[in-house]
Image: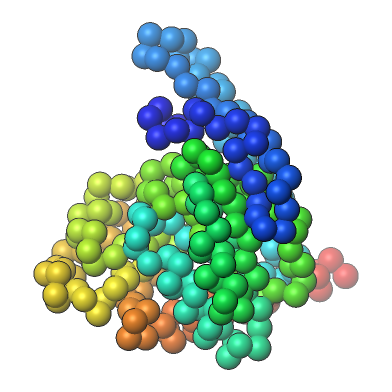
Length: 269
């Protein structure tokens, strides 16, 4: 839990889904205590909040799996290229024959959702007010406004932040952490929790790596140190470098999920 980023100021109307609905969305405020307060009580509240989140996350996961959806959770710092990559993924996915759903998290504006709709994605915006991350109940609320059976891929674009979002399971099948070449090779060491939780790490803006003096070897070493199990991609949305490989990976992951679902249905029968 954070004490300075604004989470403590979230009220019951702070997070809402736009533009399909403007209903208020209850968001249980974080409980923050000073160092002189009862630490045991604070930890207990923290545990209850995460337990509640995990319950919603499992419900989301069950819904995604029942619909044969591959659900991704994109984490990164602001400006790393999340929206640009999702935009390009939506363009390439299935040759335009399949549908991509996106839930976008930002403190304010619907800019990213509008941008993604322009390329054919079914995009909903969650504006969180002062909350620096999405939580599973926010995602569940947004899902109620989507026809999941008409979609093939679900992308959750988390709020730009590598700290708080790492603690919250949203029900995704795969978590992708983005690192742009302009951010510094040591970011995986500075934000270990985010990278340790990643199934995928994506190096973005590779077309300008040389221009900004990006040390690829050092960055890869740091990623491997903090996220040894993660699959690593090196991409450039501007030039298209690595995009086909990325989409092929996603298609293989979706096929794997559907194969497991088919196996479960056969066993149940």
